Image 1 (cartoon, one colour):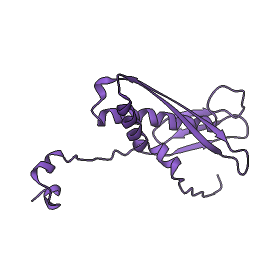
Image 2: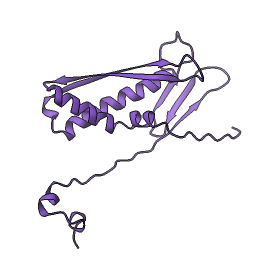
Image 3: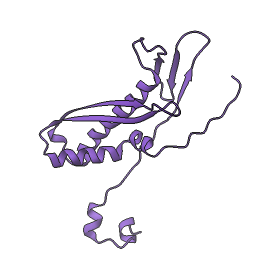
Image 4: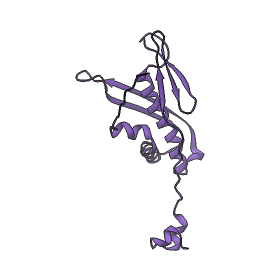
Length: 159
C-alpha cells in the first residue's frame, strides 16, 4: 500500500524529508480546594500539589503568579524545543524567561498586558535568536491560548 506522501503525489525526494508528527498527550486539569479557614490548595491531574497564598505579603504563589509562571515555564520549554527542531542544540547553554503583567486600570479585574523577557544562552546570531523565539512562541500552548482568548465554561453543583 502506498504511503501518505505517495498518495498526495509527492516525489521520492519529498518523501525522504517529510516528518512524522506525533502529538504527545497527558492528563490535564487542576482542582482548587479551599476550606472555611486556611489557604487554597491546588491539585493537578498528574499528582502535583501547591498551596496558594491569599495575602500580598505572604511568600508563595498567588493566582497571578501562577499565570505568569505558566507562561514563563511554557516559553522556556518551548525555546528548548525550538533549538532542537532548528538543529541548534549544540550551541544551547540555557534559557531564562521572566514574565510580568500589567493589571487593567478600568473595567473588570484582569491583566491587560503580559510581557516576556527571553534570554537565551549560547553563541547564536541575531537571525538564529529570532528564529528560535518565533518558533518557541508558536510551540507554546500557554502563549497561544492567552493570545486567542479561550471560551471558559463554568458549571456549578453542591459540594
